Image 1 (spheres, rainbow, N blue to C red):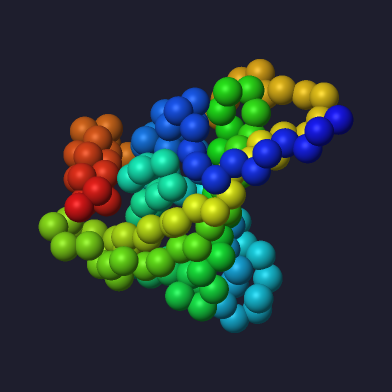
Image 2: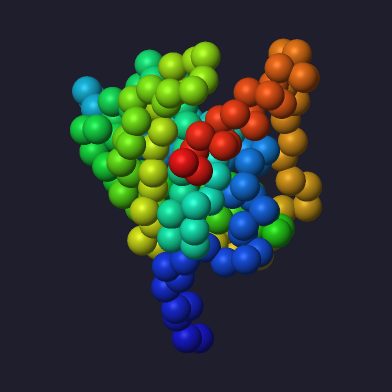
Length: 151
């Protein structure tokens, strides 16, 4: 059986999952202990087929972790499988201007994209989540963050 060719860009099938409102897992390395750390994030936006931008709280350990070690991976469920993306992250802004919260803007330049679902299975239901605060405020905040991520 021939080995799969290494994929280095985001495919069109993956784009909807990297355009907001998807559950994404971000893996970093803890700055202090050097242990792996996985966080669920939601403010994720694809800039182009090799670049993803994310936003997290400026006080999140994710920011310190990336400043100490730029290597990250993102994982998400879509199209009946699990996708993993690896790359180098850079904190572009410690606190984005134009929003009431202190949110960092982070850019990930990807170097590899691959399916990481175990053999012989498929995902039959994609994960969903519900925001637990005011829906109108949540939508406004999301819209503002996504707009700032693309600037």
